[in-house]
Length: 426
Image 1 (cartoon, rainbow, N blue to C red):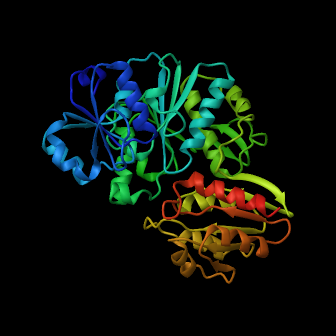
Image 2 (image 1 turned 90 degrees about the vertical axis):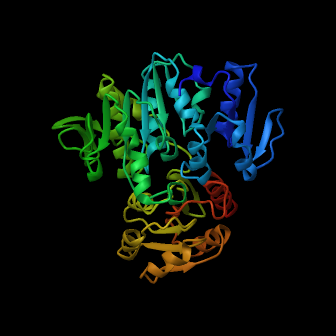
Image 3 (image 1 turned 60 degrees about the vertical axis):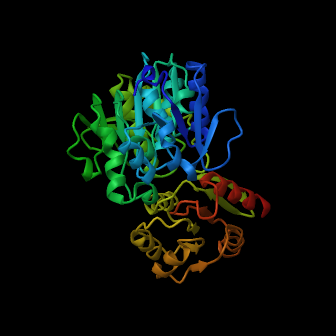
């Protein structure tokens, strides 16, 4: 849907989180005389007409267009009822993509690493003097971005790619792991909705060579491919040609070298010199809640990896500290993920202890065979126990392998509490 098609329509905004509020502000600037309807679970205290979400079915005859926030599932029963009544259901993401802009759009998604890869790509562009904007699922809502950038680095969640209608200039899908079953209703839907980004007709689709489900992608350019940009022994290569060492790249773990290779592949596709891009990456400081190390505190290091909401991300985190004594805190909301590989990794490494907590905690605890496993009820109890059982010089790692919503507002709140508890042990 393009912006002009919204004029003189009866528009409802469904969901008034950060993006919903930014969308309302944008529409009020564009169409200051127009009236808007707010659909929300919680009460709305603005001047707009308010419809409680629970009563929406009784008010569908009042709207022509619904702009749905990402947190509202496209598989929500009410979306189907809207479509049956020929109500247009769209998103702020689709509106932003339809806006005229001269800069190139790089859209990045993936089960893991999309925020880091997006922020890293943006950092390198800015470091090299380019006018680049960063937004979407990370940081600034898209409709709040300036429209005069030369490059737009856009992080998209599966909630945003699901019903996306417009192609970016470069589409990037980093990896696929089972996630977000509550929103997508099945893992098969999740894979399809995530991969929708690659079916929109981008001139370049960048994908991970290690992901077999993406092998048939059209207009494909791969990373982690030995004939393309990849890493070996902390050296970045472009095919057989060394680009430079990654020892000065500050992020921990091979998974972050994969993110670096993805960013360099994007920048190479934009025509930038990748040796300069690699050097620019050395000053990137990473993002909070992603292998964020603090300490030593009482001779132990604390690692906030609250962003790790699936077992694959936690496995990558554990591998980032080879031969270190680790106590990992695991558990959170149950999204029917498979913990077998993670439990095997822990069982096979005597230097790893596991503390299991929250909704998935008991299931992970039962799957683990190691004698170094513990079960507690809260994060406070987990941090206290970790301080007692982790040897001097060891690492206490919050990497839950599960989402946070069973006990926290989001992964940031969970990570902030972990950092607060860690500092209190000093």
